[in-house]
Length: 167
Image (cartoon, rainbow, N blue to C red; front, top):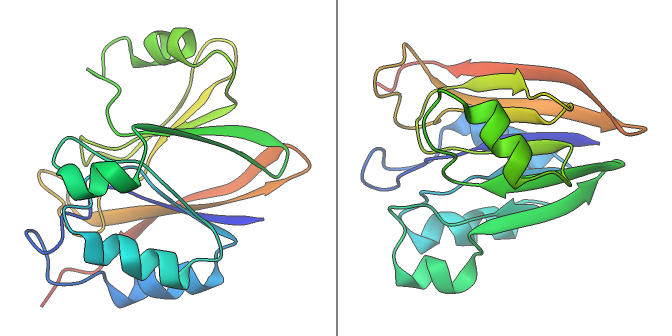
């Protein structure tokens, strides 16, 4: 099973549209995970229409229309692993321990908010993944997203993809 992870798309405030390379990944993924801060419903509509399966949450910048359509926390079993999705996890310091306490029933937690890619493992084995942002790099050198595979209850090929600068 191939997964595409993204967060913090902030459309149309930070970009006019999702990058073509990201949309190509949507078409190839078995499931697309979006960890919040969509800003517009059009992006949700687009991903719902293109993705085989979409798992998403709302973020702190998402207004009432998106909050009516999306949960604050989402959970899904994918390829034998228990995934959770949330927008914010708090400060980087102590994140692993805090998330392990908050989500003891998960194998993988996908989060966003910071626009800073993150890949770590908490005590007890919870994997924490933040794909960064495909449209708003902030203080990062590149806009990013992640792909990974899940097979027989194990993660594989976790890859952070850098997108070329917008022209």
